[in-house]
Image 1 (cartoon, rainbow, N blue to C red):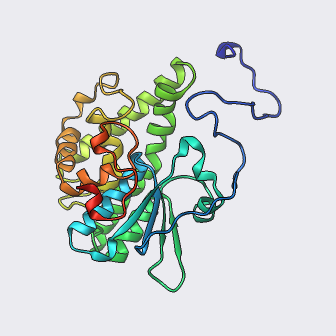
Image 2: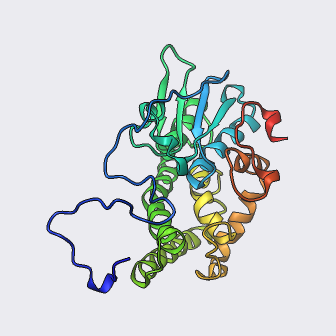
Image 3: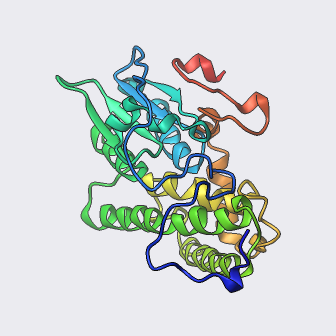
Length: 280
């Protein structure tokens, strides 16, 4: 690896043969499919193509919460997309999400299949489709969307920034780790101050904002992300921890976390979900 203190950017950047690190084998500077492969389709109108990462967990929690409320139309098939093997670059997946990121959803309940991609967009789509977890009153709805989009805009600093350089980069470099650790802690402080005054992220009501924020920031204070809880002194964020514990105890959250999960306790891994009984 080149000494970072001696690196001088070239006049025109050219992609290296391999960028190194955990995902170096699938990184590339262009979009589009790498191979032809159609996506499977199950029996339910909602078809989810995902992996049990924080972004994927947002959607499976939402679907399990909808089912817990009695919305039978939220029954879904969840298909595993192994991103470390490049499954997100199949022709079928790219047709659903041209950005080749999980999760991706296809709603087949209408005359034509409707694709929905980006986790925040999927949460909002499902909330509006089923009339749940997104307030209809203007002020409450706006506050919920404020925090939903705060998460969407902020989490890349946690995952793509801190998580990458702390856990996945081919070598530990002080500057990027310091930079992104500082930003991650600032975000946790933002959230801690909000939760000091409110039971849930957007107020007194459990919403899609909680479902979006919890897998990232809840996971961080619960010691579930990057083995970084001690490094980031997450014990300082006691209001986030109180909220994270409450969300973690919800039955639908427990179920949703298992779906498309490929790591951790084997008893908590349900690679694909096609019926509610798959999670029993």
